[in-house]
Amino acid sequence: MEMVWLYVVLIPVQHILAVTWLYLAKQSSLRGALQDPGGCKGLTGLVEEQIRICQRQLEAMDAVKHGAELAVEECQHQFHSRRWNCSTLQGLQVFGKVTIQGTRESAFIHAISAAGIAFAVTRACSRGELEKCGCDRKIRGVSPEGFQWSGCSDNLSYGIAFSQAFVDNPERSRGISSSRALMNLHNNEAGRKVGDVLKEKFEGATEVHSKWVGSRKLLVPKSSRFKPYTAHDLVYLLASPDFCDQDPQHGVFGTSGRQCNRTSPAMDGCELLCCGRGFHTAQAEVVERCSCKFRWCCSVKCKQCRHLVEVHSCR
Image (cartoon, rainbow, N blue to C red):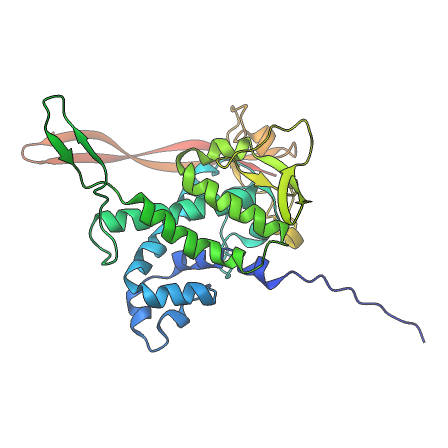
C-alpha cells in the first residue's frame, strides 16, 4: 500500500495574534459594542490581557480605536506609491500575512501601530477624556524676568506606558525564546520613540538574527558590515519579497493593475512599480472645479470642467 505523507505548515497562534487588535480600526463604533453584555470580550482581535485592559479602562478604548485608524492611514499614506502599499484585507489580520513574516514591512507595521496608540492615548489624556490621566504639569521653568511658570503639556509618559501595556502584551506572552517576539518588541519601542521619522527608519532597517549571550537571547546584526542598531532603529529577521507578482501563500498581491507614473524615475514610476512587465495606457475623464468666482458674501461659485487624461496601469 502506497504511503502518502501530508506535510502541514503550522504557524504559532501568537504570531497570528500579534497585531490583530488593529481590527478595531474597522469597527464602526466601540461605544455601542462596549455596552453589550459581552463588552470587551466581544471586541474582535484582542488577546486575554488586552481584554482585561479594556475592562479596566473602558474610557480609553475609543483612543485605542483611533490609534489603530491612525496607524493604517499613516502606513497607506507613506507607502501608497510603493510595490507594497499597506493594502488591507477584510479578515482579522488587517494587513494580511505580511505582518507575521519577520520582514522590514512587518517591522514598520509594528512600529507605526505602537506609535499610533501612544499618540492617540496621549492626546486623549491632554483633552481630559480619560479619568486616570491628564496633562503633564511637570514641565516648569523660570522666565528671564524671574517669573516661574508651568504648563499643561501632553502626557506622553502615560501614552507610552499604555502603548507598552496594550500593544506589547501579545509579544511578551511568547517569552524570550521567540526571535520574532524580540524583533516585534524592539520595533514597537522604536515606534514609540521615533514615530515621526519611521519611513526613514524603514529604509535603513538592520537585518538581524538571534544569538544567545549567556542566559539572554539577543538580536545582533546578521553581517559584521551592518552598522550596530540603536533603540531608535527598526530591525528585521527575513529579507522582503519583491512584491512584484501575486503570491497568496505569502500574502503578496502583486502590482498588476496598479496605476503608475510614466515619467517618474522613482518607485511610483511605471518601470519600477510594474517590475519591467510594461503597462497599459488608457484615457479617463476627469471632472474638476474651475472658473471659480467669489460672491459677496460669502460663497464661492465654480463651474465643472471635464477633460481627458492618460492613465497608466501595470500589466
